[in-house]
Image 1 (cartoon, rainbow, N blue to C red):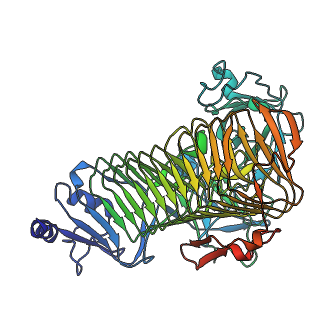
Image 2 (image 1 turned 60 degrees about the horizontal axis):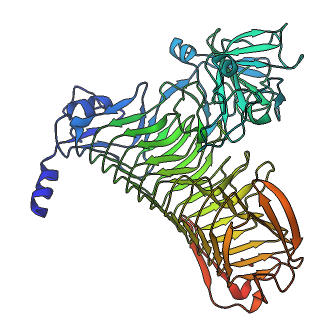
Length: 609
């Protein structure tokens, strides 16, 4: 059997590509082809074929599509980082116009719009009004929210409510050009970025070109920002695309000139798209510059396109891909059962870093940084599917939740998360809900700041999480190490939670929790917010809380009673934490050293690193 498989691979055709190649060539290493699309087309129907991209830059102005006929195809670069796919065009013929640079763009760029600009290998911010913070609009939507699992809005919003926003006098004026401007309307845990259909300055009313995900004013949130106007071009590095005049404006950074600026605008949303292709392998590719559609991105900005997109591709392998400076998701895999994403580096994405959906999928040894640069509700690493495994990844500097797991029987283990929840609230370093029998084990999370609202937490079990286990994890300098909401029969055991100030653990509308064997060390008061029967077992925990434990009894979300626990009723064991020796926590961070927390080094004010 092994011999047959090796023979099939050996017999598969190999096509080489080079930026200097010619598509009329035969595709050998000495006579390479040039176009990835032409190579894919030439290999349709050839099993176990390979496309090898020699070092250099390959410009794509349209999506490379891999279909069912390409079973077993491998597309790979020669050496990590040596082969770059660029989904756009270089902007040339820059000229000075006052203190700005200006350059013409193609008809296609002006028509489709661009939601990203890469300059000198970095994603540059779009012009914005106001320069910092947000405007406050005057739209109202007072319909009750019934929770996600409760069916959403009590009354479905109308099309008019989803496409209209009233603004305050003076906030928006004739400087806003509907042909170019875009609006981000913020909701509770996500946002909608939409175009402007029309503006009525006298009535202080905007009509959007497409519907928002929730009506402006829903949840009582009234924040919005205007993007892509000349008025908003105030800071070095910002840019503005004038779609009507077919020009891009850029406020230069120090040292940049019209002759040395190296800038790219996107021409395609998806660089590589695979559909119904089994056993596809993508390896050793560096991917840059991708656009995104102008529409509401939904929860987690998950509806946006991925620079690499795969749909219904069983046994897909994405290995050593380096993806960055794209406006949408870095990688979006949908219904890709038994897929493997390994040793990929994804950074500076407008939306999610990696979104992987498929039963028995594996995401391992990946590094994800700076997800949500344009759409702050984006998730760093989002893994869905039954029995999916998320292990040994590093996810840092994300605007919203760092890791989301969605699917029964998942394992989320040995991951490192830092500086998540930088912009939004009601999320976590590791978040999951609506599923059962998930195990979260041996993860290290640190430095997640609570920005208000519904808070930012380390480990968050949300609506309908059932029979799940959070064990042997570390939470360092996170006020809310354990957040729980409408969840049932879950276990929190053998974790280390350390915070230099006050700490809180919430269990709103939860039932039948077990909290055992944890080390909880804070510098002040531990606040426990628990409904009746929310926590049925508390045992063998070790507590360091100099100001004691405050127990608040919840009815729905309201604190009905609260008091400081006395020694007799305190179900936590007070102990000298410095004397505890029973466990050592370690975390091997991808790309970094193994970090160790020995309990002999943990004092009442935090962990010694």
